[in-house]
Image (cartoon, rainbow, N blue to C red; front, side, top):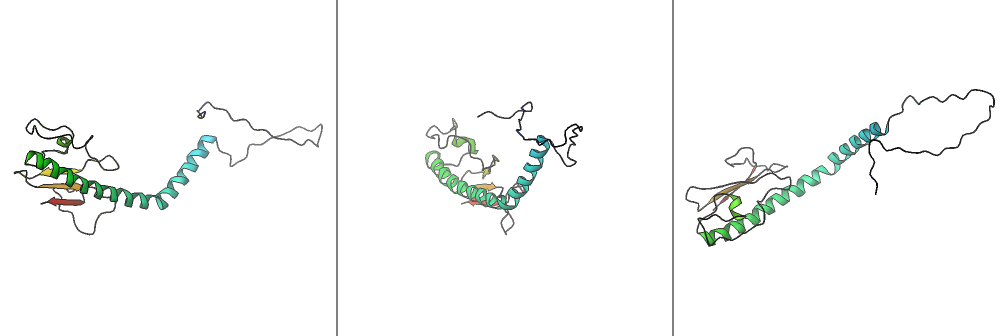
Length: 160
């Protein structure tokens, strides 16, 4: 399909009725006329408002469900890593590219886990690397106050 560009032209077909021959024809531009660009900008603003009122709450719930599900999956993957390396990884990137310090580690995921909007999950192992904190930024914050070490995250899982 051809996409419209700024230089695209639109053709209109119309029928004119001439019944006053000999008189000059005057065509006035309507006072409330707008260009195509103005119309699309106005229309997209209306659609954004509708989307934010109708779809955005559903999208926020879906994204938060995905974040919680991702963290549940990460807990399983982190346990697999610990089973192979006896300790939790230093970073979530170690799940993608195993560190040299653990030759028995595998590639547990194909890319570093991020939330649906591309935001990194907060992950920090404890000093002994036998436990960790993992946090996410939920769109709809939970009722309880988050205890995540990074206060910008509002959903916190501590293991064990």
